[in-house]
Length: 150
Image (cartoon, rainbow, N blue to C red; front, side, top):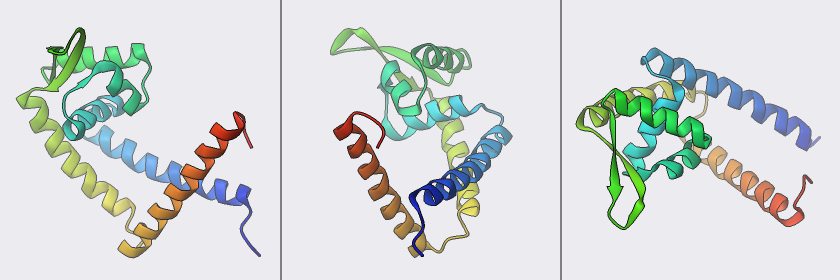
């Protein structure tokens, strides 16, 4: 008998919760909060970004992203610089100490997530990623098409 959509959703939810708990515990063990880690990781991998762009990437509200960047700036991990192409905008850059911290922390985090995902062989991970991407794109398109929940 095929798996129902509701059953699939429950499985995805439980898997997400388990992986999320691994990530949160590991990041906490690094001595930093999840939002600080997310901000530093975004800048590490995307390069210097405006504050509001970082907020969207890491799912923080305007007030929360400002507080996070303020906190990281006070610790000397990031700095705001004027955007040469838009005098109204401020771009957040990693400092040398911020880059060193997040580079080491992210490498350690990658190892922790590898252990958490070791239940799937590499080929299974690739298949799961492709199927989950397909599922997510379809669900998003359906929401955009109908403007409501299906």
